[in-house]
Amino acid sequence: MVKKNKNMKLSDILENDPDFRPWNMDLSSYCMLMHLSQFAGIIVPFGGIALPIIMWATNKDKSSIIDQHGKNILNWMISFYIYVSISAILILLIVGIFALIALCLVAVIFAIIGAVKANNKEMFNYPLTIQFLK
Image (cartoon, rainbow, N blue to C red; front, side, top):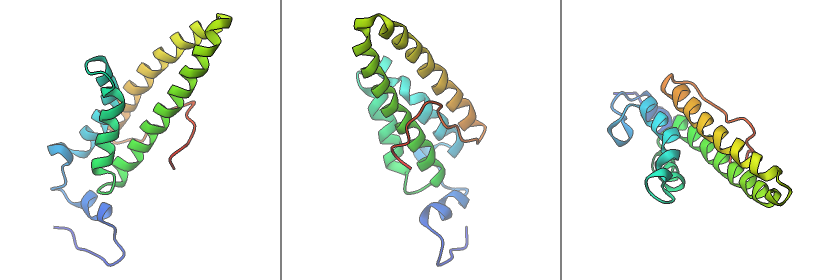
């Protein structure tokens, strides 16, 4: 059991608690699954949007690590949809087709890199991301 200090937040206590297991997983596996959950949209419509948000929202107050991974993922998702919208408009100039293909490839690669880094207990900041949530 972890000793509680007046200045400690709940997230500090739970991260130092070996019994803290979000969704009955260890912390690195949970963070890895948060990154990989972006692929849920392949199976369930809008699952790639909803699942990372649900995973982040249910445990963000309990772990600063989960909170940071979740914010990185959400910032990337918001940025990605902004880039897709711009590329969709640019389809009229043919450039948008290449941009959409590049964005889809980058989204897959970034999610896999983020999952590997999370499993290694490292933080991954998605490149090209606009920081909406800090």
